[in-house]
Length: 205
Image 1 (cartoon, rainbow, N blue to C red):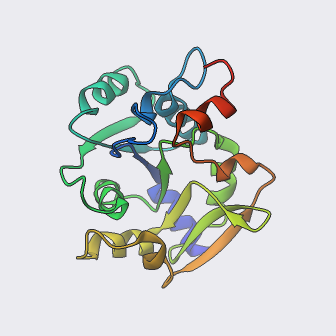
Image 2 (image 1 turned 30 degrees about the vertical axis):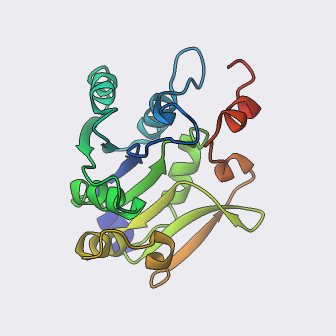
């Protein structure tokens, strides 16, 4: 109970990973249309705001940074910080590390890839109920892990302290406790990486 009380006092934050080069898609995945009113990144931001997120850190690259800054400038409901990943050759772990470093004052942090805009605010809130200081929580559909991952304080701290910036994140996580959050939403498994995958889920595109 004490861990939960301390977590609630410090709140929680989100990292959105948008620094990839989207090579297979051929266009930046963060700006793909989700519906008539949202791009992928705007939809992800909206759901985290609805869930009560206190701060969002977006990891950008040199090419998409200006466009992300413009999107963030139109959002007043949450603190948004944009951090450029200047080392695109590193593994995804480096982007995660940059985002966690900027959110280190919070008691928990979601790590959300910009190529999956489907997870909803209700699931984020339910996942928070399974988090403690020492673990991480992952949504699971029929035994398969999906996105986004929710990191507790110890996981966040050790991500920041890890000296190897290009390590494999899945292997890194093996030393921590974790809890699966069972969901009936199979869309947590989706990664949209190609035009074919995009048109499969967005018939209007």
